[in-house]
Image (cartoon, rainbow, N blue to C red; front, side, top):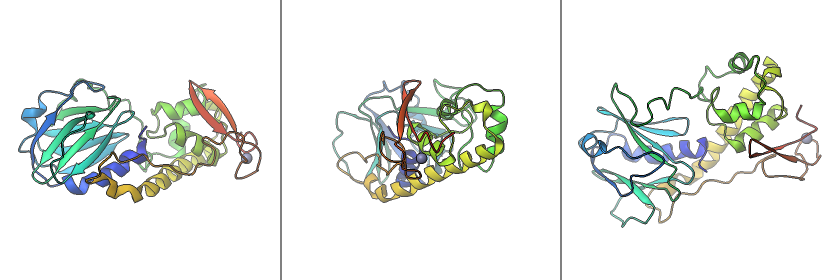
Length: 273
Ligand SMILES: [Zn+2]
């Protein structure tokens, strides 16, 4: 599943081909993604110039004067830029055409989304989508103090609070395990019982693991253009994630696995309290 680092690397991979381009049209081959692709796109997009390609959480936002095209990769989605016409495959559900390029969305499981937010208006079919999102991990306002304030009195365990994305976005299952390990915090610790100092460590650890993953994915940037298949999701070496029974990189004790809210968590019982 594409996580925040994959979405950010996708943004970096496609943006140079899109910003400043005039949209000439689009093609919707399958409009039943996670939510229906809005029909208004066929009239809203042509003639628009893309002014920026941004990211908010795991959403890609393409700004143009008339509004913002919002894309989400869901469980299995990927985007690539074609510099020449290629016949679409069975899972190539959406194309955005510019004068020189085609942006093509491939999504076998169809949990992805293509939405439209007219300038000054509400997001199509999901108007409240962005209102529930926490801070961006690289936003200077995201800090240990912010974490600490938002978790006072909360009995929920810290791993679940991270995954919920209401305090900080982009900390998916892999990065929750990894950042809690780096911060020395046990994944089952109640969020309301973690000190401000430890939350500062956690905020730093989250930024570190995400920054490293984005840098790691930078080597795949060329895969976004004219590749025959879909750009892959990158594999990174993890310190705890997926390492059941393997020695902890700090203390050599075996890494343990547990299931929280139907999601796997890995941690070191000696290093994480
Ligand atoms: Zn350890």
